[in-house]
Length: 269
Ligand SMILES: NC(=O)c1ccc[n+]([C@@H]2O[C@H](COP(=O)([O-])OP(=O)(O)OC[C@H]3O[C@@H](n4cnc5c(N)ncnc54)[C@H](OP(=O)(O)O)[C@@H]3O)[C@@H](O)[C@H]2O)c1
Image (cartoon, rainbow, N blue to C red; front, side):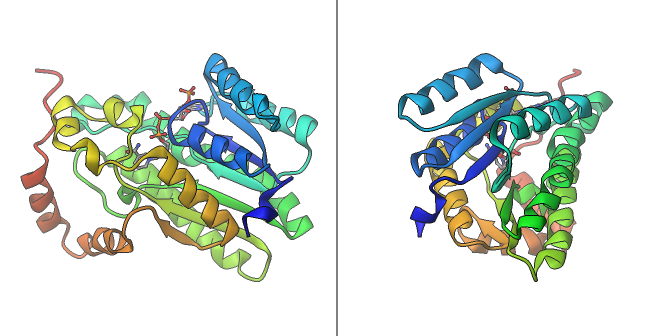
């Protein structure tokens, strides 16, 4: 089954590090031509060099997903170099867990731009051509926060739930085609994200052994490309159902969560 990946072309956002980098490296090991998008050109070049050393094809696309013009020039560059696209992996994202008054408005707007609006712009540009060829797959890296609005991360949860709503609605329209859209749900994974998004207490509270590895997430993404599903969970599917159930009684859920995770420190104090 994995043999059918060879020769396909993928665009992975947020591929300079973390989960995106692992997806790019894993995909290229199956002979997929990969385009890696992020802001840090030096890091992208490093990954591209590693991949091309193993005689696979890779392309670095420097782009800021907060900026529509920058996304459009990355799309133009992609099309110039690779032409058509088989797999769009919307992975880039960031979040913070802080008291509401400690999250600046500009950060909330950026979160919406990177986590939700950029995937929409990319889908708008690549989906028509996928539909025309009647083949293609869009994978959105989501989070349990996209289902359950945990306290202290309203903007992050809103951006991820907007993305899951968009994908779930679009999946219905794609049902009669050979183009797929998947949402991959995951919890804490060992990347810089967990340290930039949370305070030290939260990170200490999550024992290393409980974190997903980027390699494991990448393997789940690739098996989704081989065997398309609308919703995919990196851990047990029960966690997704538990996240959905919290919406029946959010106040109780918040109380239970707060017993495990102390509120973030007040950064303004
Ligand atoms: N790690 C977790 O615990 C966890 C849990 C659930 C869901 N997720 C989701 O998994 C995805 C990947 O996260 P990660 O853990 O791999 O985080 P990470 O290690 O911090 O990597 C984030 C990636 O996104 C890119 N990025 C961020 N802002 C960007 C912008 N404005 N323009 C272009 N690229 C940008 C970064 O590249 P540059 O900085 O070079 O631009 C980097 O490549 C995210 O969507 C996140 O929400 C992560």
